[in-house]
Image (cartoon, rainbow, N blue to C red):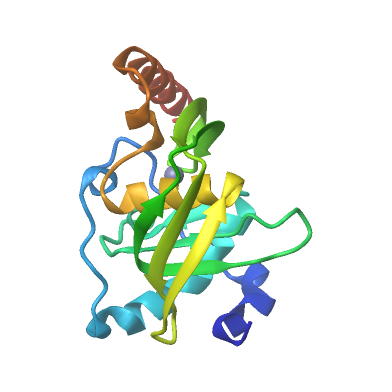
Length: 182
Ligand SMILES: [Zn+2]
C-alpha cells in the first residue's frame, strides 16, 4: 500500500469534478503517459480517488476529469474495505472466449444502466506508480471494470456496446435528466 500513502486521508480531499457526457474529451482517445506526465498524474490522484469513492464508483479514467492521458483507477473491493488499483498505459493482452453479461453504469452517464456483454476474463498489462510493469488476471466484476476503464482511454463509453436504439434511448434520457437538473 506504500504506493498510495495519501489514501489514508483521501476522504478529506475535495473530489475532482467528473465530466458528464456529452463532452468531447470523453470521446477522444487519450495519449500514453510519458515520464514527464508523472508529476501531473501524481497530483491528480488524491482528487480522483476522492471523487471515485465519494460517488461512489468502482472505476474512474483520466478523461472523465478532462485529462487526456492513459491512466485509470479501479477499486472493486466490498463496501467498507479498499483495494485501489492504478493502471498506467493499460492494455488488454488476452481475453477469454467465454463472454459474460453484466449490468454497467458510468460516473459520466449518471443513473444510466444497461447490460453489457464482454469477455468474462482478461489479462491486463499496465505500469504502476513506481514504474513497474504489472500483469494481472481479472475475471467477473474486476474484468468488466478494467475493460470499461480501458475503453474510456479510447474514447469509448459502455453504451457503445449496445444497439444504437438502446444507446440513443439512454443518451436521450441522460440529456433530459441533466437538463432538468439545471
Ligand atoms: Zn465509465
